[in-house]
Length: 620
Image (spheres, rainbow, N blue to C red):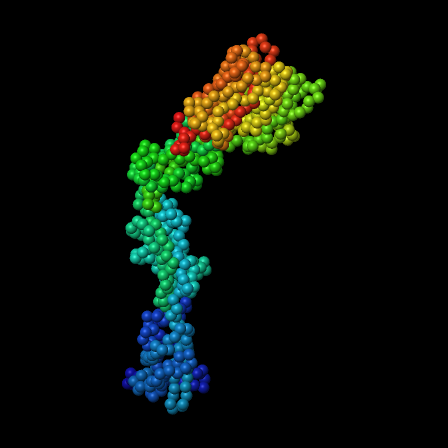
């Protein structure tokens, strides 16, 4: 039997089959994934688009096919030729003028001239997108705070050796968008928007250390563009200027020097007027350098400019750290450093100096003054802060108002004029529980050792274990009397007087070689009485200046009781005060064999201004 090389054609029973479905056409250049099915790149929109289809199964010679765009027929009907068989490729074209913004339905129409029958294929969606993302404006890239004042190598290392930034969400943001960055004219890393970015409405961009080090130091305008999947490119984003300072800077400038007179510990009294810190000469010091002092971690003070002429000095700059800064870290070890900025760029930083600080008081000031009372029962005088003739022979008592800051085992020291009693009283647990005013006796020996006076200063201080500082109460001036023949009589002795300038100060114009505290003759003055002169200096904040204390004494002779006597305060004492106040008083010791008691005069307090008009501070 002869076998022919051809199979017979199968005759399908159309009555038992559904109508033949016409497959959708295709556009080869379109995207075919589920994210962007039918999206046409904008690069393809300048010329007609080729539409691909195949000869359908029922096609015969002279059948026609035609483009259908959004349900409308376009273009000529093309004929099926005798050589074209089912499955053979066919093409149509979409004219440029049809490719407008939006989503379109692409089909083709088949037509049989014999049966006058037409059919339409399945739809292929076509997306034409010519709108650039990011309208109306793209916000700038968000950088971490370390970039604000320039990114240094140390800061970059602290960030993990890379700079992680954020591109905020923008109008039209979509999956597959391409984010391109630019540092000036240099193209930087890029990123493609993912589904997770869409959920967060932001894109993370990382600039590696290698990339950043490849860019020249200095300020660079950083921006980005967004290109969508169709190829539309956004306008450039808002520019962010970033200063790169990745070159290694010196970090070993000489450490700052704290005033050596303060010793190993800066206490409250030393901290209150501020602490002097000197900046030694450092390599490359230049006029107009900006020097920023840091008092401990995170406490960076405002920069101070290095003045021309000081850049070659051994100490290029002396700074005073105010108490308000010290009080922010009042207890502990403080690391002091400085950094130098030149022409708005970091130039280097110093080694650190460590100091111990304890600048808190056991009890916050002000503390109410004590109330002093006599203890005699027969005298009708019950005035507070007055020790009468009968009280003078007995112990006294002091009432201290309760303070909620008092603690168990706090020691109270008493200061009665020139007399002191350390650890006069210790607060006990029952005091704290009761939280009532303290009534504490004062030994008669202390009262008599100070003697009588119309303005004897009395105060107390609080000491606490572990705290080197004393908390001082306000001073209460009291009157102590014994007999009317006391030096000064019942009215007491006036304090020393000083020659003052027209403005009411002791100044260079009236004290060119020192000043004289004049004690005028007083009631019951007598030859042989011994005067003890006390002169104390205070700064403008009323803080005592120990170095400005001056003591002197004088046994009165026959001329003194008539003319009075003047105590000469040296010029250097006044210059030590410089600008502040002084207080002076005398204590009178009775002459040998006298029945008088010691008397303290009233306290004279006057202003001191020993600066020349050309001086900011006094040099001694």
